[in-house]
Amino acid sequence: ALRVLLGAEIGERAASELELDWLQSHHRLVVWKLASQQRCLAHALGGGGFSVAGVVGQLAHRHRRERVQRHRSVLSRIEDGTDPPSVGMVLCVAAVRCEDGALELTDGWRCLWAAPDAHLLRQIRKGRVAVGTKLRLSGCGLTSEGEGEGGGEGGGGGGGGG
Image (tube, rainbow, N blue to C red; front, side, top):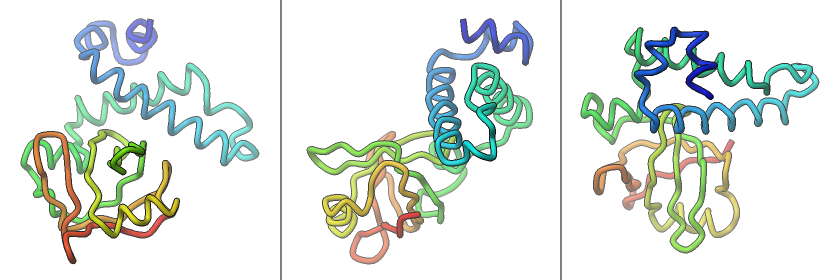
């Protein structure tokens, strides 16, 4: 159904060529973004941002940026080796795994799971880092495909919330 709605925006052929994981990943992040905007900015948006049309419009925008204009997010550039994982970036916490404190981090376009260092783990356990917190990171390293680990001072790559 999402492909049909998106086909009206980007063309049926382009929509049919999108991989299911691309659609699912971007749909999840777009819904999260629009729901957050609606919750925080309801007075300014007037209820028009979080709708099927809004989601489809955002997906069409992402398709144009990523597939047509070849824009790459910071996590995409790290994944494909264009940028080193040590590059400075601001990522948002999308999920926290309670048992080990692992964080799912997103740049708004891609997600990855990260293992926090001891300092960041203390901040998570104190409740100072939670879903929606933005972290300024630098000096990170990849531990295996799809997983990151904080780097920098004392192996830590944490940043303040926001």
